[in-house]
Length: 108
Length: 246
Picture 1: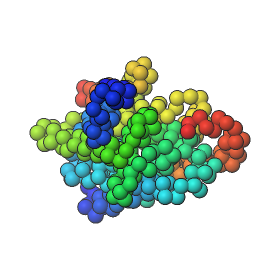
Picture 2 (picture 1 turned 90 degrees about the horizontal axis):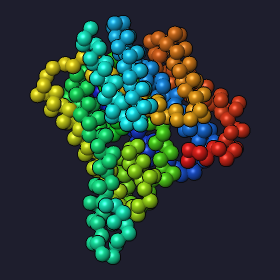
Picture 3 (picture 1 turned 90 degrees about the vertical axis):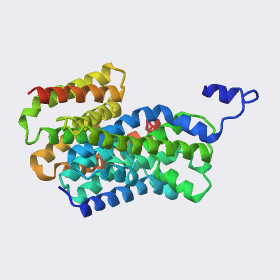
């Protein structure tokens, strides 16, 4: 389990980077926002970053407990289906996906 | 109700700006509060000290990143990976300054708070409304958002204290959240190359650097995007389609 200093370090890192990302563009105004590369990256990044995070969190769930692989695959399927057919209501999709995973893991 | 306030100014007394700001916060708050509860529950279930929930919601105030950090902290993920993940996950905030009406806020302290509390929801509500923003309305909306999020987290902690049973699999909520966010980011065929590059980067990272897969995958993905920009991006950047997302 992490000690207090590790947690404090994480809090400090998260605060400084997040605040800088939110505040610096107002101060710096031009250059950063005008940069073609930065503009292009901001359009391209979300889809890839999010799919990496989705894979990484699912992998963390399955790693070390291979019997969770099938429940995870099913629950991802439920989430995707609910989201696409249910009108992209995040709470509903996340709720159904999580519910099916909890159910499958505990029935096992 | 909102229409009444905008059109019938003569007959109805003008809404107090603080009231208007709190009203602006309701729709998004409906999603933030339950997610905050899930966040509080997960902090307790992960075995981290309870104060991590309010501390993260005050230091970071960024929902999906906070949920992600629970797992990273439990696994004692190296601080460099924490920093890179924070940078990349929150990078989108750089672009909120385009349209966010910060100029209506005059006091330096309120301005600082407004920038600090520039979360997705605050950006989305101001970007979607043509409302005449003023300092009190904007700040009260942002304070309300933070109250929902921190309050939801504390409620989750309380629920976990009253019902100290560990529900196995609850942490899947985070996987499901990222799956839905991915689907929301890929609404047209234009985003498919990024999706493929991201998935390929992560797969390669898992195969070749399994101990630092997240870090390596993110770095490789950004590297591929920079390469893509210099090889293919300039043509598309100079066409009017580049304005689509703005």
